[in-house]
Image (cartoon, rainbow, N blue to C red; front, side, top):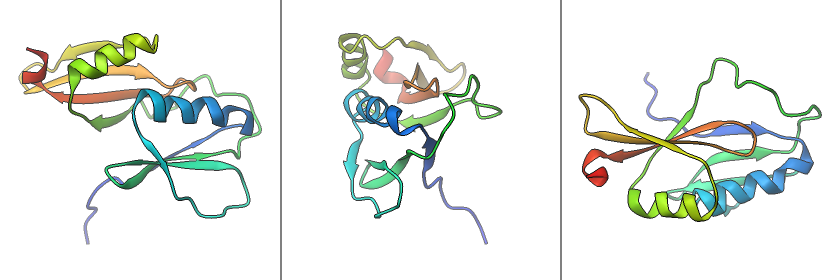
Length: 128
């Protein structure tokens, strides 16, 4: 018995916050909206590489939490660093970037509309 990979993560939102969050993941990060089961609550399933990796569920009744608790961030492997940086600037999305010491990895960090920190991992040679 072994875990094989991360399957997805779910963000619980107030129904009023679904549109802005969907827009961020689709228009800023480039995920694609896809098929979603006919749940009794509103939401979206957003796909990366043909898999539904981000689930948005309009089931929260409270305002946005002020903390992500003990979860610090969610990371995606990515390619096309230069294009993404240009795209983030065009979308007026604040970000920070840094190389990972001793690794062949370059990271870009940004926050979604709910304050969830997103990490984008690129091969270090893309930053050169």
